Length: 68
Image (cartoon, rainbow, N blue to C red; front, side, top):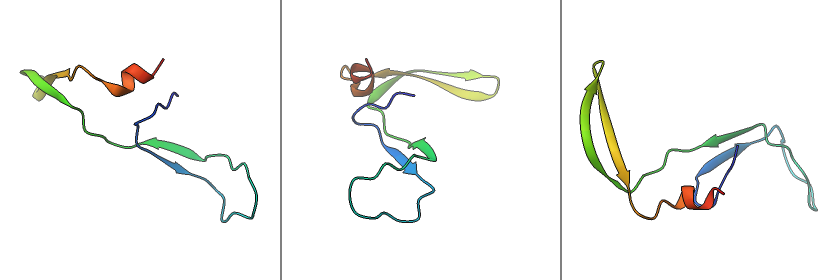
């Protein structure tokens, strides 16, 4: 999994508290939170009873630019 600047995530651990000093606590789970995309709907169609949208992203898709 790659995480890039600008992504909203939620980290959870099994730790019940922290004591002083730098401490390594392994993550129990990492959840990518829903985010808004900046783009334009260019096509709407029906695919087996579901609406299918094609979205053209804005010319500055931050996550894909940073995910290198």
